[in-house]
Amino acid sequence: MISRTWHGMVRLEMRDGFEKYEYETGVKDTLALAGNCGAFLKIVEQGEYAHFFLCTKWDSMASMIAYAGNNPTIAVTYPEDQKYGLISDPIVIIQEVVNDGDPFLALVHPGGS
Image 1: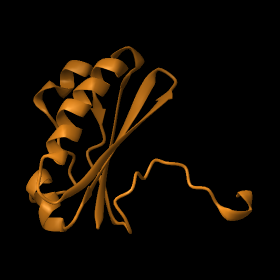
Image 2: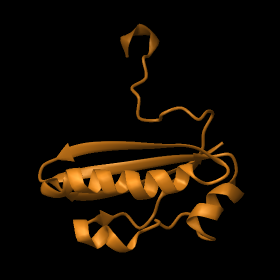
Image 3: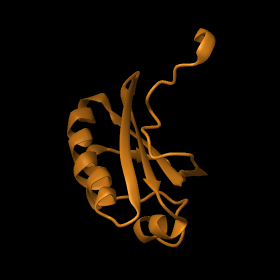
Image 4: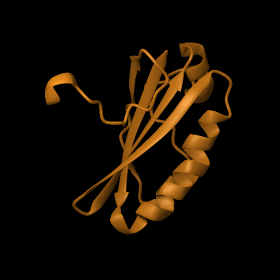
């Protein structure tokens, strides 16, 4: 299984609107594609910005390319992103993972560490 994680940020006053927009675009679009095994969104507020992390999981590189195009390490952007003042990282992280679970859930380690 392969995960693809994107990061972008918007000013805090745009957070709620962009969150809704992100669910309507990035999350909904990926979940509708064959081979998608999940889409998970994490939002972290830091200073004047809200950071958005979208991790999608795929059953194969071919499925991921069907969404992201022939250069899947480049961020997928949408025409209305600029409406929210989105600052998008141009490169995404692609890696092999062991399951389709939510990567943003805190892990509990034996021994409390």
